[in-house]
Image 1 (cartoon, rainbow, N blue to C red):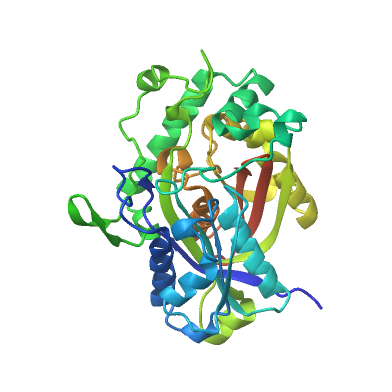
Image 2 (image 1 turned 90 degrees about the vertical axis):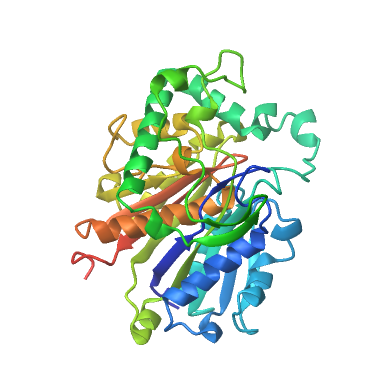
Length: 398
């Protein structure tokens, strides 16, 4: 059968909180964040009735506790979707939510369902990365991977070794720009449109979580230069030029183009193609480069065809390496992360892939002249993921 066109109709996320007892979501369950996102997607799109959602797919890296028990199914029940709604969970570490979206999209494309919700969640306060994991000792005893592969910050230091021309000063300059972009986007009210406010209980009573806790608009180059390098003595990776440890959820509503038309919904983007690729685990941040080359080759597009790129900034060095590989202007290429990135907003692992797509959705609305956008990210243990979307909010796609 011929694959059907898959469109993204809507996307929304919670605020991203700081992980730990001082974070706004410390006393909130991960699955309740997912439920809030699902309910908001349904509220914003009343033409979609609960029984129409056939699949609910969610990514989470640490699938235990309030992120366990096949969350795709449990959150469908908790959110008030129909008992006929199927659901499952996936894990591709940082790209769990991105993979949830591509899995659901593939089901739609192949006729397994017409409408699906997909996204990612990570409560890193409750479930630190690798908290209950038990890596096979053969990885190290048989030297299948470097010890660095299990510590993301060390993989970033390895990228600096791989690209010695990318200095700490460059990483700090990029990080400062990210903070400035995010602050500007907040000042202009753009980020607020992407967040569903959520009432949560904290040690200070009930409060509304409607703003990311991670951004540091008062960041300066002098302050960044003074930060410690926890992953290597006299290293280059600091808390200032890396993403944080965060809690949050993000999801999207997907369906066939035909179903959107039938329901009178105006889709925001069409899925053009996606690809994942593996790299050496100890240089994890390099992943978006081969996965982007792969998806461009598969779709027949060139990098210059992309009007906007949403790259998850796990570390500044991997973003700069990506920019250099594809001839983007450093430090500020107007096509790259126009609203800022994970260094400012945070990186609640599996949530970040869908966040990139929501940013694309809003950028396309603001820029109807744009046609193609890329969402791409590195993945723990050495992978990259890249998804290309076409803008359906412009005249070029008609």
